Image (cartoon, rainbow, N blue to C red; front, side):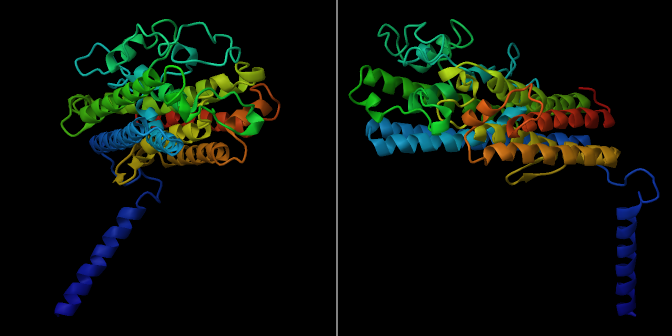
Length: 404
């Protein structure tokens, strides 16, 4: 009797499970319920972990730079560059949180940080920071560099105050200022497949070596400080996280979906890919001046990281973080549109990976294409795929009652 009762309960459980998994086979509404509050909470967890990883990566970079400044050898210089490249991948994924009315872009609110330009402004006039080989771009030599001007005190506050002081290219802080100080100008031609060739002796025997080291250290310290502030404000019970999670659910969803839509459909596809493809700045008019990480030749990896960040947001997954997502919400409302969103995301990542894993560097690939070609190569194919993905993000948002 006991055996029969257990088996009866088991069969009943199985029957209920099958019903729950298949009750939309009759054309009715999908059975899965996704709570918007759960999607928003999972997004908050994802943002926090992403910024925490970026902060930790920057701390590792800071440690490597401190070691190099203390013991300026070629090996320690290379280690600092390696640390920059590793940290950069984490930060690149966080860019999907921009244009979401969050603290990194917003000013004039009690929770605002407004540090995006201080962290990642680009393209930069490197002559604003340090010496350059004149003639490699039209604006070279337009400024007396901060490093050569001994009247300028080099510390975090001063560098922050000088950022974008003269033009939008007079950048003094952030990832690309540090990148320039590590690699120097890339004066090689794209076909050579080489980054900037700054020698570590710029920090030992060259003119202004001590001020250059002070600049590198201060700019890195400021980067770490800015990332720490972002991590702290997105931590559980952090200032902005509290604000975000108290928003009307539709407003919170619209804000973070808009960030993914903006990066895929505009910033990455247009500003960071089409612009260098069509640019004539740089050596021999080949466009390197407008590639994102032009000194380190890391643009291919920047493109992957930005797209991966959008993927993380759409599917609610990053590292150990995984939970209800925008995609799940769309699928619960419209499975056909959810499939279109998934297909577009996979197509975009495939095209982006064709750049990231390409045997040729990005600064060479852009010399082979223009945005007006009849038949696009791998670079412009990625633009089409990213913009199609953005269109599907927008169409998916409509299915959950949100207009971007």
